Image (cartoon, rainbow, N blue to C red):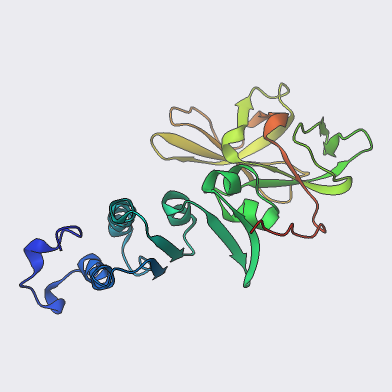
Length: 240
């Protein structure tokens, strides 16, 4: 009870407990059996946003304090997966797409499903054609990704919102028009359109941003942060 901060609630009936407190009671019933393995099946799915954050911290603290135990945590929330896991298995329709540490999954996604699922906002994808010299061409732009890949012909470029930079029109990799700016305080999300893009791309930038909609801006891409995916390439088998 003390580990789960329930010692002051021991005289209450179940109906007097909040959703988060009931979750902790359920965890406590498991702890007293001294298991070597815990299975959490979406334990936070029915909680509000603030309580999910609080309980996520509780579970992380519990894992640290219990020491040598294994926790298998099933979730559709990629934030929970990234913050709680030592290793993640990304599943798609019952099939394992990739296994790795949170940062391995984030920085080196095996395919477009993993790349688009992990990260918020999700990775941007741009259709391109990779020529024999390894240059990815899309619209008026051409760029040579520095990450190793074996893709040629039709391909998808993947780049995360934080790896795009806004510059003056005509000075970046390509120009685009501002569709919408979401100002979130510490950061802003800028949504951009261009004729050769299938959908708007997202740029994550600083919060102090003076930018109007329908303005044309330049978008700078660092080749080191580009991923190249083949839409038809089989998913690599995960490591055991």
